[in-house]
Length: 308
Image: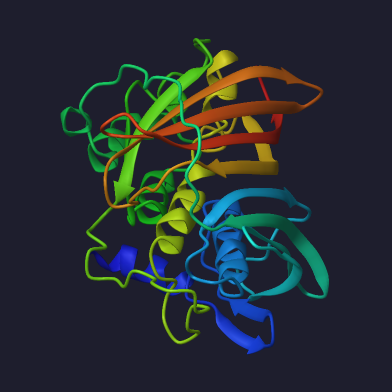
């Protein structure tokens, strides 16, 4: 496990400051606001800290309300909306400087047998055959508006081994392509030594979230990194790093279908069915390497063209 992954696990280890009130640190971001995946993952940790450990999340729905300040802590307040026989519902509001910046509703479910089917996994090359970020990013440094972007991107994503199947948007600015994108990802190190939650007790406050909650929160963190790439591809835009668009996440929804491990390879298959009114929609499916559909994701974001 590298130092960046250790730092990310610390970031997800929220401090309880009162009953159902938690505080999380922020970290430097690539843009002058808190990374949306961080806020979503931390909010899900806060919700999970109030739910029995044998009920993992099965869905979340979230809205990004204001840009977060990466220089200030974030306070997460959890409302215990419902504790049913099979399902538990929580609502979380993230606050900075006295104002809500993020709102999340999450539902948790005890294990249950039922009907099963899924879409087949799309074709994708073996992740080991694809270049790493350290191999890919320096090739396109000339496309970036700021010469320091390569270093900042590598630092921001050092906890995650993320590999593009095809060239990312920043590699081909000005070239419109099919609005589809695929990436393989996993944590940059094994999580095998971390605890697995057992029984029905609420997770302890003095340790990072136990698995499987931790795996789901880590995938939530990554899910915001590339989902709007397919919108950019459709219009030949390179993204914020190239400087031809400005944008931000508006809302984010995820459904967790089957167990997953964030330190195993996961395929993130993404597409954009529409863009209009300064907004673009991204839709994603996450599969395990052996073809299990484990997560579905939908996100809409503000995407405004700056030039060309």
